[in-house]
Length: 397
Ligand SMILES: [Zn+2]
Image (cartoon, rainbow, N blue to C red):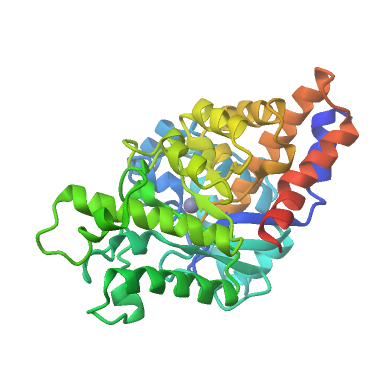
């Protein structure tokens, strides 16, 4: 048996800790048709419409057949329905029927995640209700999304997901700046006590992640000030991000950070260099390899001890980039700092993300085995670290 096949088989036996997921509440997280699946997956981001007509379906499939998102959704469907049929112009109605049947048959989508995807724990980023565990704390361990705290500079300004702490938590409207900082700390501690194992920033969907160190006075000028200039608000947000890094260090809570893509301008992980170097006690987890700036992520990971690389989403965005990135991560010496998450909303996409992650890891490791960097046994141990042990250590779960 090839090293690749041996690793694939081995990874299937691991009880996975999935470090990043957006699984929607029960049943919504279970697509009832292809249209539903596409609308709640990254295929919905590919600028092609699926309205159920033959014409649109043909156009969709011909345009995206080679796309990584498409490929892994197809693999997920083929594996779930135990078929070699391709997801093409001819067969898509068959898959549509099968998805409908399955959505009626399976009573628990969480059961699917446990049994088919073999997830032991899932760190859930339920941004629609930051810190939610979907009522299943045994499976879902939440992360707490902090974007909203950078938007409390007015009581009604909201982040990309429509969140503002004054609106969400009923904070007194006359809270002064010092009080606001205290409330952030209080809320984070409360969420930690309620079971959140990490903080999460998806700020590249809101603004640049070039956070500069600011003084208290500079930041205060941007807070609840009707005459605040744009620079004052940026100073306020920069200060709040640093404040959150300090809270993360004080309470030993790992800080997950979306890097790459997002708004593109201002999402490159390298922009975090100042804040990373000035907060050596904060554990920063860089998501998505900062795609497409994976070299920049590698440079940071190489130089700083307080950085972890989470490869979530990357194998689904570009599988070949993920394979290359994992090899480079290992070559630059970070075996204990690599984790994996599915970064999906639905169970079918989550399973596809697992197949993509499994392939990327097995391919990267088997290449290294072939080049004599590793033995097969060491490859298995590294797989166990990436899909379970590193996350267990980092998030204390
Ligand atoms: Zn995500």
